[in-house]
Length: 242
Image 1 (cartoon, helix red, strand yellow):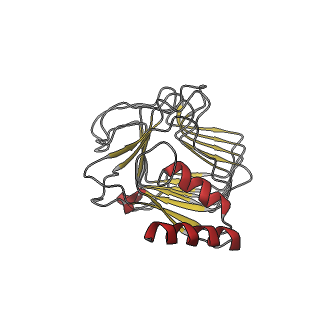
Image 2 (tube, one colour):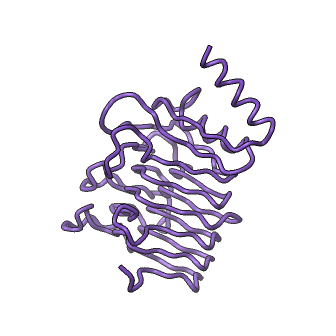
C-alpha cells in the first residue's frame, strides 16, 4: 500500500510540475529505486529536485551503470551525504567501467544544480561534465578518479586528452570546492586534465586537491595537467582565503 501511494504521489508531482525528493534505494543499473530512475524522474518535474540515498547495508555502496546516465536537464541536488553511515567520507560510488565509451559520470546542462559526496570513477569520459546552457552549479565533497579510500587510481577520462576529472565547457558561474575541508573535492588519477575549463568564465575553483591522495601526502597525478584553461578568462583558481 505504501509503495502504491508513493507511486501515486510521484505521478501527481510530475503532472503538477512540483519539486520532489527522490530516493535511491538500491544499486541497480535501472528500474524503480535506481539512480538512473531518480535522474529521469527529476528531469520530468519542474523545479529543484533533491536525490537522496537510502541504500541498505553498510560501507561503500557501488552503482555500476550499464549505459550513460541521463543528462541532468532540470535543476537537481544529488546528495551522497544522505547515505546512512556517512561520516565525512563518501559512501556512494559510481563505477563507470561498464557504462560504455560515450559516457560521462554525471552530465549537467540544466544549471543551478549540486553534486555532493560521491565517488565517481572509471568513466570513459569526464567524471563530471558541466555543459552550456547551464551554469551556477555547486560541486563539493566528491572523490573523482580514486577509490573510496582516496588513495588508489580509478581514473576517469580515457576519451580524449581534455577529458578527465571535471570538464566545464561553456558553463559559467560554477563553484567547485570551498574554504571548509569538508567541501573540497579530491580530483586525482584521471586521464587528461583533472579539471578542464573551456569557453567559460566566472567559475570559482577553491580548496580542492588535485593529483594527490586524500591526505595530500602521496602523489596520484592526473595524466596531463591538474587544471587546464582554454579560452577561459575571468575564472578564480585558488585564492588567498582560508
